[in-house]
Image 1: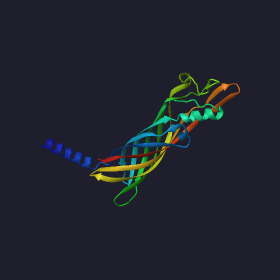
Image 2: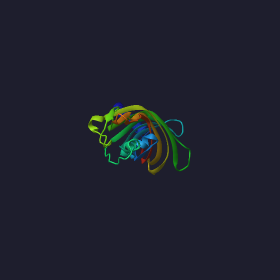
Image 3: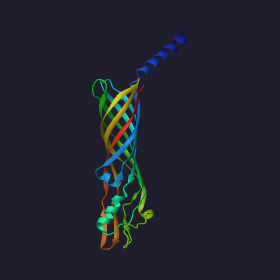
Image 4: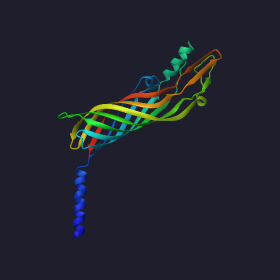
Length: 232
């Protein structure tokens, strides 16, 4: 009898705790838009994120843990413009199919504004960005053809690479209920990643004709996403 009562108490307690859990989980998908120098080198791509939210005793304040994924495609025009500016008169195509991806792992807070009906919010996060490049130019001096500076042996002058650096994000959005304990989440977020996304390299046509592309770092991009939040 005592054992059955103990099991009943444990069962009821677990049920109450699960019914009142302060945790929520979410997932969303959308688009990333590079800005600044990062936009000169890479095109927009798909963006996604999964998140865990912990409601604090403070009204409207959640702690957040998020893992994202962002994909990018190299802008061939970035290199074409460098060649055409420094070696004018060349119009050959440069058709490198280079990809990059970024995985931010972030801790932060989200504050829901006390607005009746809808639930607008602002957020802030810090963490790390892990960026991977399927190909990019090495930090190297590259000799090219005098007659066609766009003819570069890519296999010897490019690399697969990874970069990890500090990051932060600030965002805003709105959540509204679509079913019991389920909300639709629409948001925008500015993201900063302290990583190198283009190495310094020199392209040499001959001893009197060459140019250097400087190292570019500190990627910035904006994400626009929509998804669901499930309140456990």
